[in-house]
Length: 254
Ligand code: F6P
Image 1: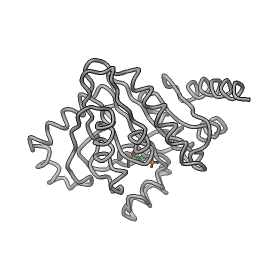
Image 2: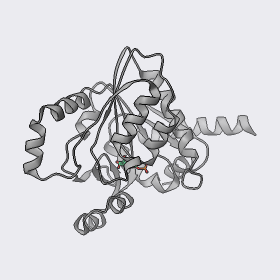
Image 3: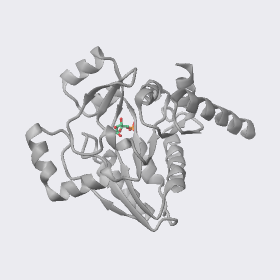
């Protein structure tokens, strides 16, 4: 029955929190691999967590992906807050436009009745363009906002799936295979031990930005992401994980 279900999920949340060594885990029922609408439930759960941590002034950095798109889809006015500024954590990342951080950021901000700032840069950069762009005042300003984020909301993906989805070079696909990369988040690839094996040279959110005094919410579900979730949190920053039953059950089995 319903009550039993809920208490089962509560138990799993506790177990998962201990296994991953993070501050909080929220599990919604179902498996988003099988039922895409489960992503909307994760989206809602994520927004409720965001509401718990918003203060008078907030800078909320967001990344891309279909799960973050579901957070934006479910967003509603966050009235409690006086000042709500959403900022894109990343440029394009080779995603389809509806799944890019900029699109998601603008939609989320509009629905939350907040403001937004976008990051207008291509995601993969040469050293030379990187150095030039980083000096650009408008970009510098957005980067400063990202570094000052009070809340970061990001997705986690399976390494190979993400490399293929972005049409990455064969050399990266080979590296993923030979170095056993299993997880991807904001352009970083991680192996089973949570070690970074590859990082996209890009302007935007960096792993370092997830430490210090801020609230980090990772939203990722589906049985197929279990390995990625487990690996990412081996070394990952203390976070709140919003996930689904499909991923949770599988992580606990690994
Ligand atoms: O490309 C942006 C991104 O947030 C990745 O860092 C992450 O691996 C992926 O999207 C998750 O995508 P999805 O929510 O569609 O599984």
